[in-house]
Length: 158
Image 1 (cartoon, rainbow, N blue to C red):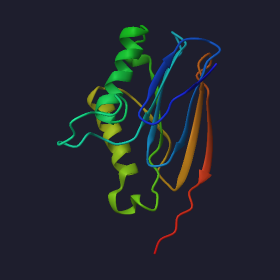
Image 2: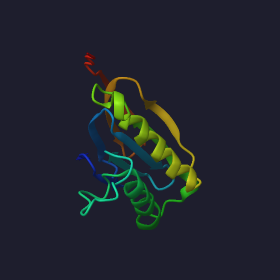
Image 3: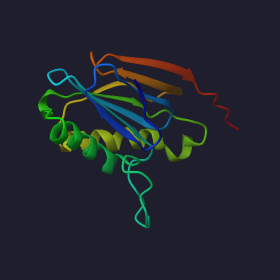
């Protein structure tokens, strides 16, 4: 079954027939985790690095790297019995778009996600980050194999 991960969402599965999928990662970051031993996959679609200080309500738990990444790790390890040191963690996205040239949201998303992973003592790979591409990623739960599709962002600067 295809499990779609939308903006600010995450999912974990250990069902062999499942494929985790998220679309249109431009400045957003897609983070995947896989435990070969448990045949368990997790994916999160991070929109922003952290909530602003004056935010009264958090839209979705996985919307921010500072909140979503620890939740995903907890689900993988606590709920599904994975070991932190066995997780194969990959990052995708963090592109620069036209509106992102000034704010550098993609770069901030990548940096904050890396900061969290390093703080937690987790190894990771930057598989396909930065640049000016929108990315769609699909992860097969049975094998942990990731399919990446890229599409160039149309950047017009004035």
